[in-house]
Image: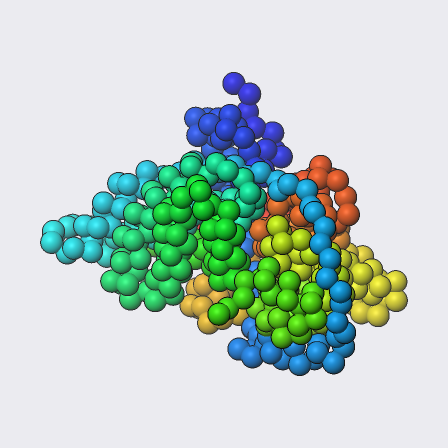
Length: 235
Length: 192
């Protein structure tokens, strides 16, 4: 068995590996362990603060900018096709976790598991779900709207949608408004994409890409996922 | 009805300044984030935000609706950042040393209110990240920021850097490699 080169781990982290490499990462314990080490390190590097801006920041920028602008004539140029992204497979068996989370929410069963352990499971489920959502969103953002086949991505969106609903309800149930907001925004994108038909995919995908951009959804999902993982690991 | 970025850009090309205002208000924060991470200085970042939108306005005819408008802005901002950093280095105006950030830039950063434990760990990690980023070249730093924080793909990074895709990919790899060497021992200690 040929193990990953160092550069391949980096490519895998950023979702740039092909199906064979992805499969190897799933099947090879050594490579997967090394990948997890790199993933944890790079995730921790995301915690890199930028100074807050006021709510009126966009308007303030415009007021400074406007006096310097002059009209420009329109034109258009074509660009090369987008780089193609590949998804990584689920890192955890989320289904088991989701069933567990659903059990927490219903409150119908007494369990010996402490609240801390429950929260940890929920956070790790959340982290795993957001990791996979991030991969899908990243792929959608970079997908050429003109490309025809997105069936695999739609199927993935449907799977994520089911998990997302349960996790959002869990977040609401536990009073975590921030995560609930992110999951709500994510759910609307997943729902729109999962229900879009291939016939209407071009315009629909463009609208979805715009929404992901406009809502900074990818960033929020990424941050929420990293936060959940960090919190879960600390419990 | 709210404009999409593409629709607003189309209107702006026709001379509709309100449409460009929509784009500015929508994307200022993300441009600021990139600018700050590149320069490590709020004032420089503000200058870069303005310069980025000025250049964007002038180059609107070159914007292709097949790419995201914010991605296109990142490319412009990245180039502006490199211009600024190189200019600063030439003039030796500030406390840059080689490819480094100003020494005390973190002192000016106001992080949102985390727990004391989170604050301590975050502060440790951020300090380590800062030190590690200092050791990256401009190209590696920009490639890493675009890849890691802004989610740009290799093609976009290559465009921003003005290099081939393989070179961009290698810059990201080199950056990660250096960060890993610098951070892994420290983060291992912090995590315990």
